Amino acid sequence: MSQASRLQGSRPRQRQLDRKGLSLLATGHFVIDMSVGALPAFLPLFVALYALSDLQAAMIVGASLFASSVAQPIFGVIADRRPAPYFLWGSVVVAVAGLAAAGLVAGYAGVIAAVFGSGLGVAAWHPEAARVANRISGTRPATGLAWFMVGGHLGFSAGPLLASIAIPLFGVEATLVFLIPGSIAAALLVAGRRHVHAELAPTSAAATLSGVSHIPGLVLILAVTSMRTWAQFGVLALAPLFLADERGLSDSAIGLVIFGFAMGGAVGTFGGAWLAERIGGPRMLVWSMPGAAPLIAIFILADGPIGIIALVLSGLLLLASFSVTVAVGQSYLPTRLALAAGLMIGFGAIGSAPLGLAMLGAVADILGRETALWIVAALPVVGALMALFLPEPRSAPG
Image 1 (tube, rainbow, N blue to C red):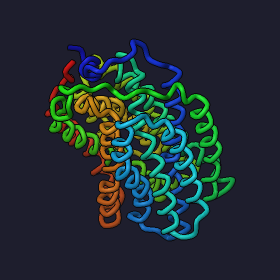
Image 2 (image 1 turned 135 degrees about the vertical axis):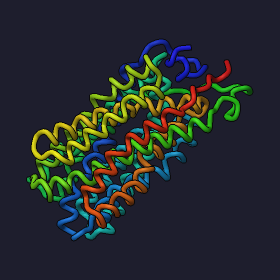
Image 3 (image 1 turned 90 degrees about the vertical axis):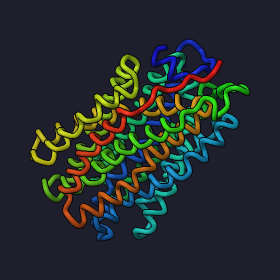
């Protein structure tokens, strides 16, 4: 049986990718992840404004991710019971409004509360969007999910880029600029709601959760994804501060570097899906993740363009597996697509980050940022070693 067949299980689906629906989902994902990706670019401003430690700065990002991780599986359960297209446009509004508020509130506690609210919008988006993307992807769920995910990666890249342009003009209130793309994306999703509506995956008495799921595989792919997430957000939280204090880069230049790292992930997403459809998701993880480690090491050791290029390339290899891990996770839970997406994205790809950020932030405060970045470099290797033990997904009974 082909990898694509294993990933889709036995649920009936259309033959072709619904490109218009996937494009609309990618647009919404662009704005959702733009609100998350922009946050690290504002960290130096929050640090200067409120005299924060590295741990406090890291937990600004952690607050958004924690909100998403706690709520996302709950939204997944709701979306698996009945289609919830209103989650799509509504979550975009909430996510950008929370980010905008972070630049207006007074005090560190206010910033934490605002980004926590933004995280709830992110939580509502992903389960329903990933469920619909899977259902409208024809017989190529890994490619369809990659199309959907690449919108998020491009948004994650555009977030710091837009911030780097707006910050010199507006300072910390540059967060308000993100209301503009948020309003446009929400309007497009409302106008095209017919194209982003998909019925639930059919189930039968035989296709019960216990009968088709592979819980050990699901737990292990969550652990693998968590290692990648700790490395990704470790870079996003520590690299801006490292570049500002150790390398002397300006806020705008730092935003461009983070843009390059995230853009590398966007480029890698399609390549990762292409490779996974040919050699299998688990094997793709084993081959791709370790390559990020020496590139992060070069970034730590090399000043100037060489270090920055290495960091960008590390993003390409690190995030090439993003859509693949979601597709593999859904194949381990084929009758609960939204719940699987909520777990894979909500916990594995986002929600596991606060624990990693807390540990890395504490190491940076005690032993220095360079030491914390060396730990970041080792994490993809740990994830690849875990991926060696991933089982083959089970197919749902017909």
